[in-house]
Image (cartoon, rainbow over all chains, first blue to last red; front, side, top):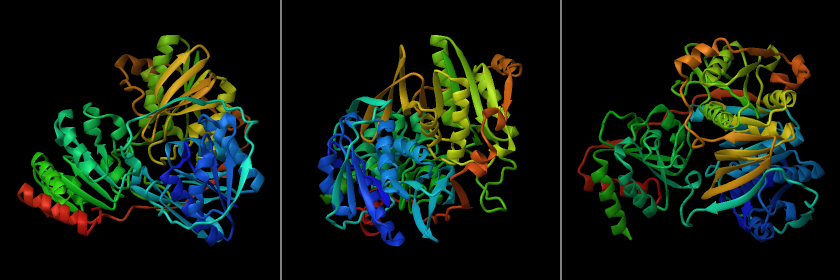
Length: 319
Length: 261
């Protein structure tokens, strides 16, 4: 059986979880084994109907009191229990902050090989071959498995969503015997509506050329008009102009949106590593020799303080 | 309080990666190796905690002989002792086989708090800290950007999609450091001089009570089948035009090529 960790929060299925279940379904036909989704934690029952849209043969629901608050070890124990009982051979996780936190503990419990943040999955001789960027995308590794149980976490925005409604059996699993060690005692979500950097289809990023924190509203407005998220280069983060959670690059987040708009970013090797797999790259920079132009699908040599407002104006006129 | 910090030696982030003749690894010749940037954050956090609470910090690395330089850096920053898992049997380990060895170190030293960086820059796996926690039977705080120790409890904030959450766990525990937790210090000259006299203990597979088939390549659950360079991106149009014209060009591109409007 293929088991997919279908991450949900308060009954809402994560987009990355939908991608993971979609990939599980595709893998199920390639390997000719059934695929099951596992939803767990508070509100999980509310996510069952949504997960059915992506074609699982079975849904396991774990909604016991010890898992009401997120716990990496608690969730891992619940997942590993289902995996062992069902004799799972493949376990998929979304590479979300939760997936990345829980999956390694599951791998340790079921003695599985785990490949993180993969961007491709193939089947050869009944075993998986995972593709994964290493050195933040400066090289691509193809990784094979030696273990019987094969685990991966899937990078967001890479594996296509595929609606494929099914009527799976829903199995309730008892998790009341689990006693978590690390427990989420509080969760603070920022104001709604903000698009998550790693999941955004459009990312607008600012670098040293932004000159100061007071100018970031320029790209924030542009990002909002495009329904995207705001990124930044390490230079801008280190200068204290914007929080490090926005940093794109080798020591920040790796993103692969449909469109990446780099404003005043020269394109250091570490930055390119973090965004070089974007489908389209638009660069706006005063320096015509900036290395960012070597990877840009569209390069604008010009002053971002003139080009960005003109672009914002143009987009507003469209609506 | 006793602290254990695990560090990995990795190629400098400036490195231009070249694929070696075996098609599975990188050319190491001419590469400058550094302490993985996230591990520097882990070291710094241990130093801050020791300064506040007292105790001793042991820094640990696993890897070939060159790894000693990473330990010297950590000692120069202020760690007290170092342990080098140096044995041919450790080589070629994936995250699982690495965690197996490191968990044995945790059991041997019984620290109160164990620090990891969130990932080794390079393999970018983000796995070993969590796996070691599981194998050693400890709770952990993943991707930690703020840490508080209160009695026998640690509370850490971690970034999640759209916000933050606070994880509480009892000691002993594992903390996986993410950028933002602190600003790592640079080793001072005095520290560098002192580091030369600090002890580095060498441990083999047998010293950890493990067998050679549990660690290294033999104990790995995954294996690189191949390593390639990503297809080079081709630069597209480059325009030097008036801002208004540029804006129109970008909108046309977003609409017609990227289909993002």
